[in-house]
Each structure stands twice: as C-alpha cells, then as structure tokens.
Length: 349
Image 1: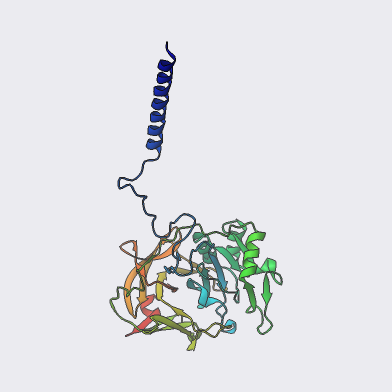
Image 2: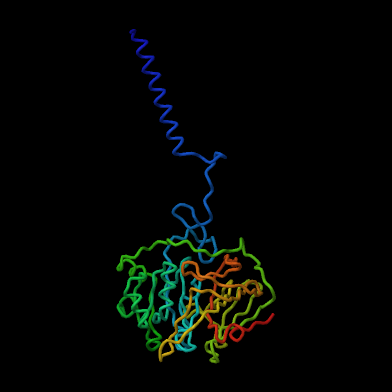
C-alpha cells in the first residue's frame, strides 16, 4: 500500500476519534438552550452570600461569616447592654417567671464587645443549633447543660473561660457583668475547632429595596408585656423619617452602653408559643416547633400572620410560606399562649 494511502487512513481515524471525544464532552457538559449560563439564585453566588441572610441588606457583603448567637442579660441591673444594636435578630424570651432574656443573632455585623452575657436555657441551645450559630453563654440550666455536653452546638461558656475569654466589668456586680469581645469569640472558635464559615441557607424573605410592607391597619406605637412588671414591657415607636422602630423598656430608651445610640429595628414580630413552668425557679419549657399565631409590625402598620418552624428556625409566614420583611434588623418577642397576645400586645395608630 502506498505511503500516502496509509497516511490518509490514519488521518481519517484521528478525525473520527476526535469527533467521538467531542460528542462525549458535549454530552457531559451540555449548555442551557439559550447558550448562556443559568443565573445564580440570589445569595447563592459561588463562595459568597450576596445579601445578608437575616437582614436582606446587600451593603457590606459578601456575608461569609458564621452566625454567632449570644445570650444577653435583660435584668434592669444589666442595662444598658452592649452590642445589641449590631444584632441582625434579637429574640426575647422568658428566662424564669416573667423575667426576659435575649438571644442575639449576629451575622452581617459584629460588635467589638457584647454583653452582659448570661446563662443558657434549653430553647436558646436548640435555636443556636437550628441557625448553625456559634453559641455564647455564661452558665446554663440543667437541661441546657445536658444539651451542650451532648455536642449539639459548637459553643464556649463563661463557666469554663471566666477571666480569660470572658471578662468581668468592675462597674457592675455578678451575674450582670460578664462580657466578651468578638475577637475572643473568634479565638473560641479556633480553640474548639469550630468552623468560622456561614453554611445554613436562611429561609427569610425580604422586600426588594426598602419595602413598604403589607399592613392591615396602622400601628405606629406598640407595647409587648411580660406580666405586670413594667421593667419587662417593651415599647416600640415608629419613626416615619427613618422608617424604623425605636425601642424602649420600662419607659427608658434602649441604648447601647458604649455609644448611647438607641436601638432601632425595621421589623417587630410577636410569636405566641406554649410555655410550661418546669421547676421551682420558674424556668420554662417553650414549644418552638408547633408554630402559632403571630403579629408583624412593619412600616408603621400591623398584620396578623402566623409563625412556623423550618428546621428549627422561627419564620413569619402566611399560608405556610415566609412573609416578606422590610430589609434591616428584626426584634422577635416570644410570648406565652396564656394569657396570649390579646393580653400581651397593645398597639395604637
């Protein structure tokens, strides 16, 4: 056979093999029919969170830090607190009897220091686990201790690190004087081999832009009561210029101890949940799974909704779908079904 004939056969075989290879690659890496890459969902850009998952705000991103949930003291002797204004969401719960305590969730911004840090309850631990938050507390109830010991959530506790990661202020007496810096929280993550990265997709929904809300009636002033003690009555007044609610407690504006800036939030939520007193100290067991009635205050108005639990996260909903929040920070009150929201919440236009 002539040399040119052999060369032609080799060339045709090579072309055929290449065509088969190209077809295989094409089958494995099919492009969308429009010839363009499919757009990423909001907040799902590779390696980045386009908007803050718990505030809906895009400025200051990307948002890649792991959430931190800190138990903040709300006894009158612990006021004013430090670092509450930076929290994306503040959950207010009864800790014992009608004394409330805060679980402050940070992710979009972190204060230099936060506190006073107080002891954990079982529902704080469960909430931190649901949000995959690094959990910070100083002390614990017996139920919370068992949950922490089980490894349910990555955490540090002031009982173990008093005087090292946690520092006592000299202007207040224990247990109202335990503080921690965000630098020490990050150090605590390293010491406990906890991931510092955001991982759990939050199911909250937000209006685009500032949003006006879908209000049923005007409600520019509201109060949330826990029993008869005015020290644990929260009041919010809507500032139309700032489009935010200013918080007060016991008739005194809630301000940051370091900056004296008043606490302002875009949304106020009230969730009704079943409470059971479980010991002589008035500690509570709170049902955060069953959902129930809720009120949403936003843009100077109020709307009757419901709340649901999605993977343990507490979500405002209507027809079992998340309702849209105004972008910004949110305050969530958890009140007992007895006496219920009818007795616990008052609002006026």
